[in-house]
Amino acid sequence: HKAIALSTSFTMLINFLFLCSILYVKMNGFSVVYLMKGLLKIITSTLLMSILVIYLKDLFQSQLNGNLLSQGTAMGIIILSSVLSYAGSLYLLKLNELLDLVNK
Image (tube, rainbow, N blue to C red):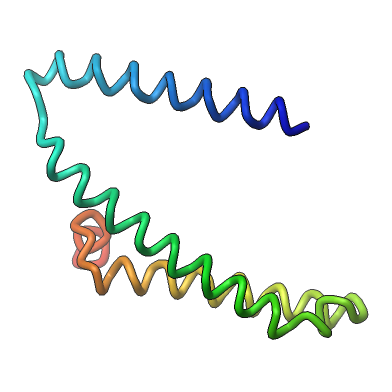
């Protein structure tokens, strides 16, 4: 299973780089700095969300080992919290694409 996931990820990365190079040539260039700023904001938000999920997993460990209802409730809280923290941190970091979506 791990080898398939790794090879799929690697193939997707190669495909992404190939398509980016074609797009760069077809558009006569695009702002790589703009894209890197957005990527840095996304990576920062992802790290913050990951830290929150790890903390919440430890906090709700007893519920995650409990019955089905307590497991579902704990997972729901963890998932909702992670989505809200990710979107909120991207909003606070002023990711332009998210701001465009919110302000429409």
